[in-house]
Length: 279
Ligand SMILES: [Zn+2]
Image (cartoon, rainbow, N blue to C red; front, side, top):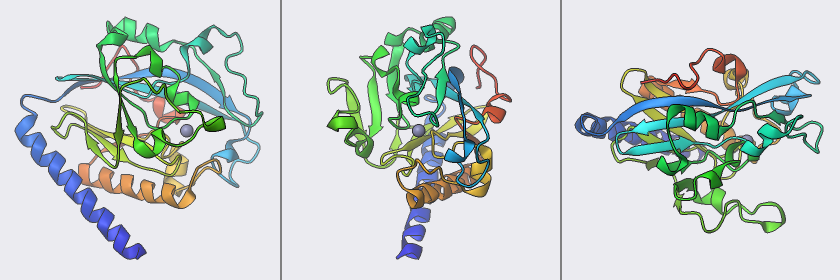
């Protein structure tokens, strides 16, 4: 059964790559990604790295970064994740967690100010796609009340604390089941990668000059966790997370893609931040 499901997943991923590739050949002349900006969506520290790498780096503090990614497609703007709430920027100590082992986030720059620097208004954003509903990814969703929310149905319907909805029920939403080709030309593909949360997703972006990139969301937190297939103890399902990591590895190989790991500071420090951009 396990072998069959792996084979089925392999076949499915091969089809995704084939469809994305074929549609790209015919459609990318007219519709394609133009730019990708990396926005600083908060920086943080936690007292014990082993929360994210069980048994490894026990008691060692770890620094985190957290990005939002603003993508200009010929058909409109899409924002991938929204970071910690901009309101945290005015708190002198940032968002101090009640759980001492959780992340302590600070907001050196607001999302709004970085969009403004690029010359993009919140009302310009057509889609906001959300990797998952942890607070460091959904803090500013309601800055974009008109934008279509692209989220997995399993994540949208996952009950929050005290059964609270995870999003404003009035926000326009597309509840995805599986993968989604956002603009229909294969250049921006949402990939279902559950495990960190029930409806976690990642994003495959094809840039004309830079090539293909997979934006991890929290499918993995650090390169060392990727290399060693480590799963944080806080994840919803270890086995499903490992399956999603294998899935991403297959997409990276098939598309010759880079993996940009959202929370990995060492990698982030090598990348260009907005207002610089990738093409
Ligand atoms: Zn998370």
